[in-house]
Image (tube, rainbow, N blue to C red):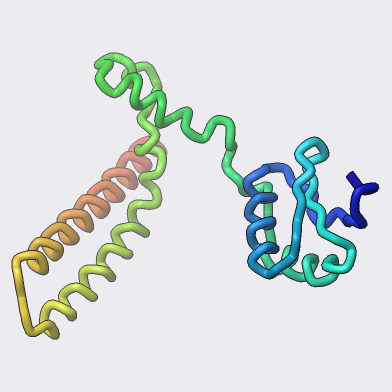
Length: 163
């Protein structure tokens, strides 16, 4: 590969998606990049190397935080297969969406901010129609749902710590 053109390795990747992302970013900046699939490397021409290294460092790719790309749909697939199986989730398996309930307070706060913005816009707008009222009601329901879910999560966590 190195004999064909004067290429320099700019990035050693763990996940192909990161190399393709960087290649697209480099091409947007008019820098030709080549992915070596066998060696998991990204190459650029020698005369573009300095500019390309600045762009790659600016992107700050951290592959340790990348999701497991082979099994990222595993829990969703399990839920699809067993959501109607009445005994499956009694044996210690829990649906994937219950594992994220600790984040529901953040979602409730974001929904509250969205609700405040909607209410302000509701009073500023000169034409009030059914859609504005409907979105307000939906936002209120979603915010209440996230808040109740987070409160239940905290109370369940407290009860588990008492035992």
